[in-house]
Length: 146
View (cartoon, rainbow, N blue to C red):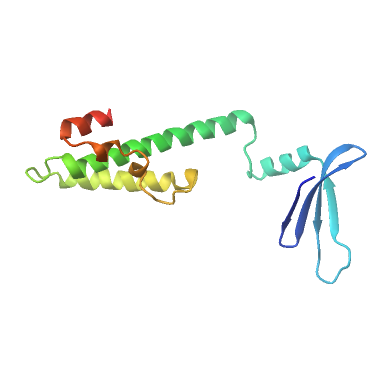
């Protein structure tokens, strides 16, 4: 059986006469015996769903995972486009300051919105998708964006 201790709360998986259960015990200061509550795993799940700690159903969890994957893919594409604009665009001969500023802002927003998905905490996505940095010419870099 598994057991978790967090500060003064101890959570333990147990089996009682009704089947599997989760025992929550919290030691209060000044008392010898802890306060204990025994709940069925489905009761604990219902409480977590009610307070928004976990998704209410499998379809919601699947939808969230799909949206996270799509947002991470969009973040990677924006980061690659930002990298390409900085390295291969003709901003030295044409005034592309507005475009570079806009793509830089989009890149920052995408990283921020996806920061909690994979624990990168703002690291650039181009590091994991380095196709744009490996290209040696503008047409090759542009093709990698498609």
